[in-house]
Length: 139
Image (cartoon, rainbow, N blue to C red):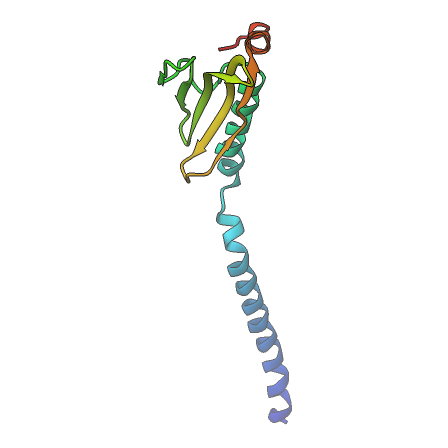
C-alpha cells in the first residue's frame, strides 16, 4: 500500500521542480531586457541624425547649429570647417567658373568618424548664392 502512495507524493514535487526550472529559464531569457536601460538609448542623439539636420540647414543657406563659430576657414571664397563632435562639417564655399559664368561651389560636406561622408556641393551664380544666403542667417 505504501508503494501506491509514493508515486502520488512524487508527482507534486516533480511538478514543483519543473515549475521552478521553467521560471528560472524565463528569467534568464528576459534578464537582458530588464537590465537594458532604454532611457539613455532614446535620449542620446544619433550622430547621423544630427548631421542630417546640419546638412539640411547648410543646404538651405543657414549657419550650422552644432557650434557658434567655425574652427577655421580657407581663403578660397569662404569654406568653413566645424568640429561637431562625432562628425566634421565642411561648408564648402569656393570661387568657381562654369561655362564662362562666375559663381561659387557651395554646400555641405559631412564626414563621420568611420570615414563615411555625404555631400551636396553645387554651382551657384553670384546672384543665386547671394539670394540663398541673404534671406536667412546665412554664411
